[in-house]
Length: 154
DNA sequence: GCCAACGTTGGC
DNA sequence: GCCAACGTTGGC
Image (cartoon, rainbow, N blue to C red):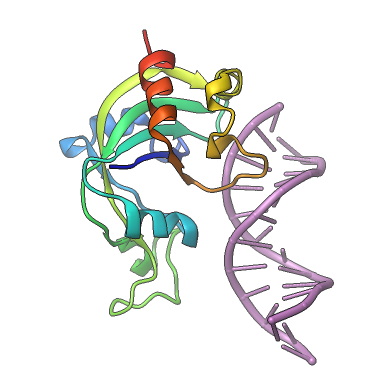
């Protein structure tokens, strides 16, 4: 059992989009970074906890809780010439980009970056590290507890 | 829009 | 394999 923080631009896919999706589940398309891909491909298991983070928006922060809902499979957008995520180097018989499905669990009151940074127990959180640009980062069990039990109350 | 930080690409 | 140039992320 692992825990993760996954960033999504709310203009593309927000926590409300996830809640409103068929089966409240969406494929996590568009990851084009090898480290983030490897997390999904090699480490994620069905049932893993996900902190759903809104990035590149007016008030970035954790907007809800989700969970990993599938085993890894090839990201279909890499083969789709119409997609902004199209990758001409990817081939069907040798996919480059893998993803998992993610399911809605619940919304939280928005937990903003300053709120996360103000919490001493989150001082070592990977997503808060200087220069971090990974769209998927591991979360420790302790960090998960602090965020989902303490910060997400309300 | 700016820019720091990081990842990727490609020439050599 | 090095590394400069370029592209991207993402907060501000």
